[in-house]
Image (tube, rainbow, N blue to C red; front, side, top):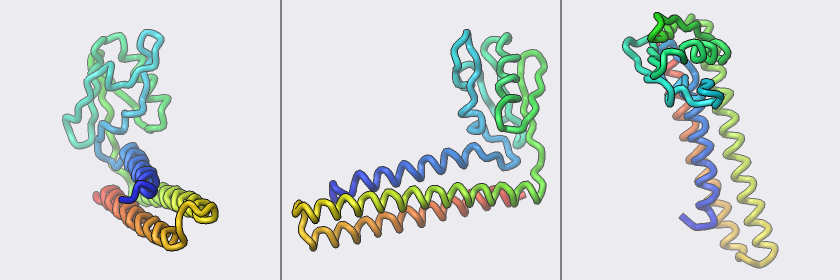
Length: 184
């Protein structure tokens, strides 16, 4: 890939990476430890990632088990879960916290799919904005006679091809996540 195009391809790749990360935090009625990735727990006055203060496992399809390395952290972890936007109520036995995921209703599944499509649309807009930035840069370079008219047209075509490829990838990721949510 042309060095001039590579930076824009990397930006588009990061957009898809961000979309995939956002999709990991959408709960599909099944236990997914990645839902807890953004959760921070107060550990000796320092906000720490939950993974760094506890062992997280999935013993059953709809249960996440959190075993803190220090038992006094249980209250702080519960508080972090309750204050998060996960919508889950933790239960503990003094040593282990369990998060049980209820089965999703049909309406909730449809709502989640709408949210998935909205996030995908935002990612497409971001990719198109990157394309616009690339084309503007190439236009400026053409006017300043840094690149020829032929090279300008070639770069413009290549940016469009890269954009099209990433738009298709966003659609594929969106379809995969939608299927996952709609599968009972």
